[in-house]
Image (cartoon, rainbow, N blue to C red):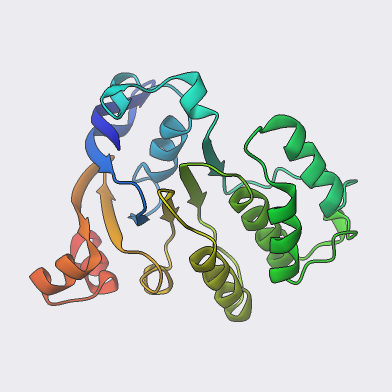
Length: 228
């Protein structure tokens, strides 16, 4: 289990994450929910080791998380990070060189599932194709934590359905997934845990079924109540 205790991240006078406390349980799919500027991306970057907390601690099974642990955390940012001259196969080989847990066979399978041509160059891809490629390359790592920052952003309905079904069908064992998105109603189909972040702090979290029963509303209505 990953435990975050009193996490704080400051950028000059701006507090992006403020005293955040959270447990990430193995085998769960989390919706990380909050408006722009609530601290979602900063929190994910701290979990992935991309940025360091100003204060607080992140532990794995009771011990400080190390660089060896972070090597098995997969993070998909919102920004595009493709080399335009590469095609899908070349991009997979590039990932294979960097990440020991990258599975090329699984990647080729996911390209097929996403209906992506392995020889298509990144510069020739539409927004939807590029989004599906980011999902395929990230899910091809055998990581114990996978973080997807806005995986459904700017994607048409058909592509969303494909992405959601692919995520649902390729998460097994003790892998935990954290997905951030403004499309709360779309995420509700796949997640079984919810984390609501406001002003950098966790204001509500728990199993989705438990939250729905407790508040007698779905995640979208909870979003409106918390942030309106």
